[in-house]
Length: 293
Image (cartoon, helix red, strand yellow):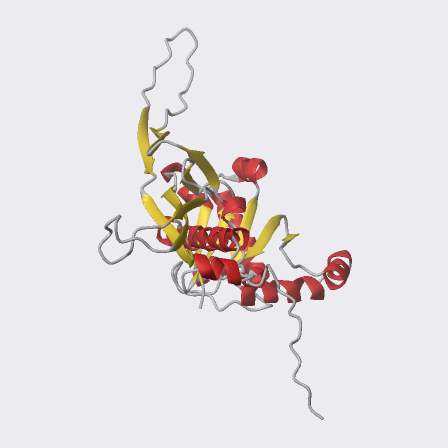
């Protein structure tokens, strides 16, 4: 005999959580969240020079100059999702909490890729900077045997740029590609005792601190470029009034003509983010575009 049976179903309310991409911009950037369109800063572009002292002679007064730099928060991205009333009622996967969680993850990933796409604003670092000939724009083939050279070379470049004080205050970090991070794990496991033991036992899921700097990984890099240097130098502006807000619009206008009389039978779930960037000129030498093959 053959019976026809309807089986119960277990719904997973966080079906797509596993697809979230890692984001590092909160760690590496100086994040300015405000409601202004323009954010202004300045740096001393002409520095007074140290003068010799002659006793009994008046000091030579020195001039200085400051240069203003601005960041404009004007780049917007949004994620609008339409859900039909009937689908919302009949599907366990189209609940507001799950959809807005996914929208938030997508906007975070956009910010991550936008930050990492800023590599042209940073100081080039290439084969020349690890003693391999070529130039600072020559791509490095990252391996388990040279990843420590990249780390040490970056630290040297920070010191050469007189950035040790800022490094001490803010810390320094690397945002590797997953394959590069694997080489770092291999190097850590192969060298030393305590660090190798810790890496083998605990793993390095969300990052690690090694050789005095923090290491993260991301899948949002522009091809051929890795971000490294002193943290909180790269500045990211986010418009406070729109960031993280969840809008629910009943009976949204149809997409064909935007006429309010041509509405859709459902809801629009909507959020957006507006951002801007600046790499302060005075500190550009402390953040690096590591050119990689």
